Amino acid sequence: MKLWGGRFTKETNELVNEFNASISFDQRFWEQDIEGSLAHVTMLAKQEIISEEDKEAIIGGLQSIREDIKSGTLTITDEYEDIHTFIEATLIERIGEAGKRLHTGRSRNDQVALDMRLYTREEVLATDKLLKDLLLVILRIMEENVETYMPGFTHLQKAQPVTVAHHFGAYFEMFRRDRSRLADLYERMNYCPLGAGALAGTTYPLDREYTASLLHFTGATRNSMDSVSDRDYVIEFLSALSTIMMHLSRFSEEIIIWNTNEYRFVELDDSFSTGSSIMPQKKNPDIAELVRGKTGRVYGALMSMLTTMKGIPLAYNKDMQEDKEMAFDAYDTTKGCIQLFTGMIDTMKFRPTVMEQSAKNGFTNATDAADYLVKKGVAFRDAHGIIGQLVLHCIEKGIALDDLALEEYKKVCPVFEEDIYEAISLKTCVEKRLTKGAPGSKVMHEAIAEAKEYLSK
Ligand code: ARG
Image 1 (cartoon, protein in one colour):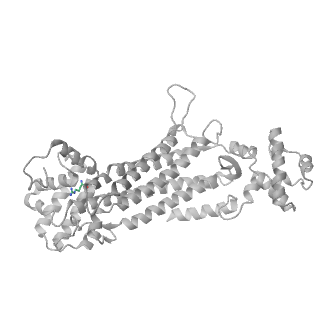
Image 2 (cartoon, protein in one colour):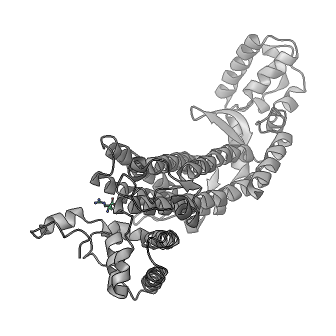
Image 3 (tube, protein in one colour):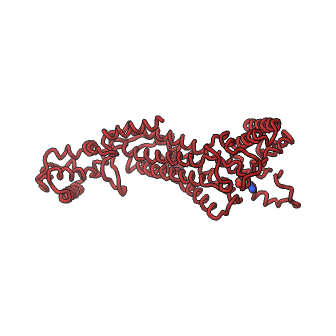
């Protein structure tokens, strides 16, 4: 069944039907399509464009279709071009004449623009909810690990000591920004395109603001040509999803490294690891690797959408049907990744002794040793040179700065005293870092309190 057979004299080529159809993927927003039609028909009756009687019949019909699809008694079939056609045809089949009035003052162009927006709007909220769950787990880990020392890295070389709370706090900020990006784009996209018609509005006295309010939009969109051809919000959402995936991927990469036999900073739970079919000893971080890997397809969806849109003249063109498949895949993929990643870190165990030992053996306290000399009056550049020499000496002996005898220190610089050991202990190195955003426990507790407050809203 077609909605547009009137002016044609020939049957459509079978391959064209197949190539043109979108029902295999746009059936995903059947519920949004019905929701939009319910609002449209309510508005049509209020404006006396259709009778109350017809409105009641259409609403009853749409509700029965909704119930039947939900319960599985009505199956969406591929014989129709798209979900809009399927629902309208089924309505006419069920209620007859009145059903033919549903599409008054509406085009599939503003209809699909509405459905995609309604669907995407829900996905934005669902993604935000998952990010919040992830942040709650990160916060729990931070609270439990304010004094779990570990090396902080630059160039993947041990740099200065930090704590697990501090390291996870960095990711807390990334995902917090991701949530704020979602909130921004939600606000921008939350306008209703219905009533834009095919492109130039309609001669019926539609009350577009009323339809918009029925569907919980902030208002109606301003320009009808833009309304049917705007997919900016899909691009913005895909861009936000790409950034989320980029963050998850970096985090995954770290967990993969920390979980190696060489590092052993963490141990992934059996329930979130997989084995090898040939090597019995293996326990692989497949979840983290898959999250890292799936980042590629989400970036791909963003690139695809940007490219699809770049050459489209106003207003609607069929190219825009390509806004769906890859976008849906990216929506699903990102939600799945956030969920799996959350479960993985929630069950992951830390090895504090290994991490602390690694920080010590990596000379992460060398900057603090230089600062110690500065406090005793040595110029920083000289102090840097002196500690460099001592580090080299320790590397040759295979020991940490903490293990070097005081006379060895004094041989290189007489300013050293017994208090050097206290000054370069990991605890001191971390605890003395008290500038805003640093790992010292005093400021870390403040950061945690602020994060808690943020999540309580
Ligand atoms: N399946 C189409 C899409 O996804 C619906 C809009 C069709 N409009 C049209 N004039 N052919 O974009």
